[in-house]
Length: 585
Image (tube, rainbow, N blue to C red):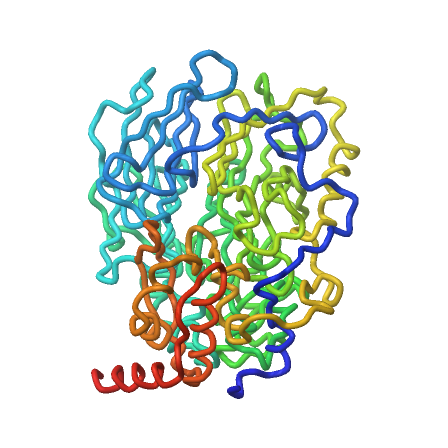
């Protein structure tokens, strides 16, 4: 095996097949028949607005009359980008569902859905649209307006989501994510150094400010507001302190890329997902620095000479309010303003921030984590440094071994006109309406303590280095190469994550032409691609640093595992394809 198979890599080898899920070591239930399956603080109730949507769901917004607008996760054609729902009989469930909006097919990364000044704003991967809402009408009657177009020549890339937020001065804020993990010379290739300076920061890896009412804008019409932000999906304006906030996605792959510096445990829990106060001119430090929530400081990334200990100039960059554990995938942020309404929440929630943690994909060999709605209380007009569990039970299992084990993954949050909270999830398009039915004057520490106990569950707690290792005392099964380089994305069961990383089971890319399959592993691949009729847009890095024997092993493994049954790939076949690629250069 190559020199990359160091001691820490072997600690990370995954039991890909034949894995038996251990029992949770808490006495807390993982499923409930109440509240549409959700665990909530005492006094709260949840109604299922809709069990599933054909386009599934990303972000959502609720109009003043209670109509719900959902960003479809999948738009197969034009006029399918937005899903509109209405409850006509007052039972809390949608009985009218219609689709409209969008100019073309979308590939799972359209995100924004916000109502601002009577307009409905939403986004595909490359365009921010808006419609003027017509009072009393579910479907807008006026024409669509294109507010912003991402006109970069590269087109689609990873981290291309476009959430939107609005201030009270007529501005719209839109992130342009960086199509990279850590601005390496060769993206996601072991030991590849980082580019210094990172040229991506000129027009990516930050938040731009635009005129919220001007049509036909491109990035050059906006102003760079904040930088050093790799990937932003959760974004909101706090009307109390008049400040923009975000919870960002931290970088990945410490173990795969820098195995001699980071253990499997460190790669699972680091770096932090940073809850940041975003002031104009802010620099959060990506790609040069990351936040270590265990050490409570910013450290130098290994691509730039870091070793997990060097702080360098990390203290000069913006520090987070809270450093949430790695890979929780914060995908929406909403400051709650509903206290005082007829069905508003208790005073404890006034001006606080709700955060949807979509859930990790790459924490192996430890359990996946996130998959809940968190809450950060307000303190004197700004977010505090404490956080709570508000809604849990989405995954329905504990521990979560593979992403596909989770029944639901929370994504969108919106406040209704009556102070209720709406939650949308991505896997089936289920939507809940959460209301408070208890005595507000009696809500307090006892109710909060009930949810605090859920922090002991494996998808929330910091994993124990030994006892939470899912491969502890188990033989290594399957391919070593797969365990190190493939399972973090395609998962231990080969089913992918249903959005970024495609399945390997019964995939035409796996079972079809062997030459194409070998070329993909050697050369890498950038989306969008289609697998089994579904679009995927993440980067498959090149793996030409692996030996022919290693590539033969892993491709044979995937063609004969996960229910697949196809012929083996020989080292000679890999060698021939590698030689052919070199001749074409």
